[in-house]
Image 1 (cartoon, rainbow, N blue to C red):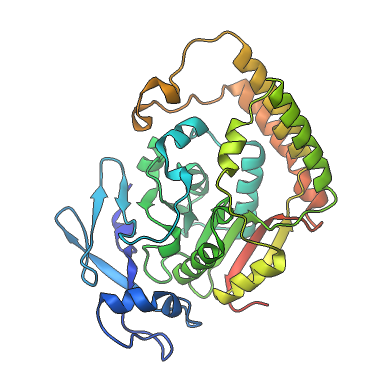
Image 2 (cartoon, rainbow, N blue to C red; image 1 turned 180 degrees about the vertical axis):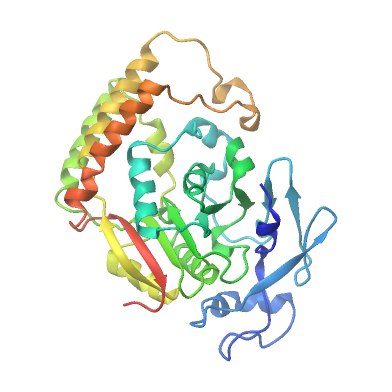
Length: 378
């Protein structure tokens, strides 16, 4: 949806107000100054200048600095605030067919997705009356999960493939995380799950700077991503993955979804110390971190569930629309939700998989949950 509350907080993604502290105030006027000096000014230790407000005009939102008109689509339920300037490579998650093949539904998250979502809720601790921003919300599934218990949720993603319920119930913006289209300190908290690994180092730094700018000094940011490290426990997961590949070669399981999700990973975060340096450069510090050594997840979700799904696919079934049917992704009906029995089993397995965090969350490895706060860290 596009609420008046959201419209009060959106701004031009690429234009900064000339006012700022002694370090980041504009030395010259006009949009050219915004383009040439954006990164330095946005990363100022003071939190950077505010972004230029947008005014309503011709069914859209106009920036008085660059002159861009950003359309509002009330039917589809989002505002299009994608920068009109090239910011570099865009993830393949922006592709229609890619989203169709992922088959996302608005059922509650389960298995590892629920482990991540619950860690977000625990570490971020959004309170009733607060607004939370989902950075890289995808179809909007986790934004819907966050919008409960009096919490208001908004989501931003570069691709407009939002679930119908997300378009009705949460504020949605089409945009690039490297140039967030929001006013300064617009959200008390934000989260990003499985996003940073799709960016190069400059992109990770830009997203952290932009996220910090949208937070107040008391704000907090939750991330789930990974550094290029592994623990001894990761050898077990690699063994499971090798077995799964062999089963895939035998036609018993399908690796397509997992391969799709990871196919454009850039993996720019070399270590946890490297991530802390990137955070410090962006004006953030790591306040809390838990590692995600996947042992039960590897057996349950990466192996057993795929074997079960493979068996179901091999069973005779009616025809369903697929990527090759010539049907546009936007016109396809949403994937069916799991039945009650399947959901109950998935919930039980989810609780079992949470032991990966309870038992092994203190053992340093690559995947991690992090709570970041404004302030210069190590």
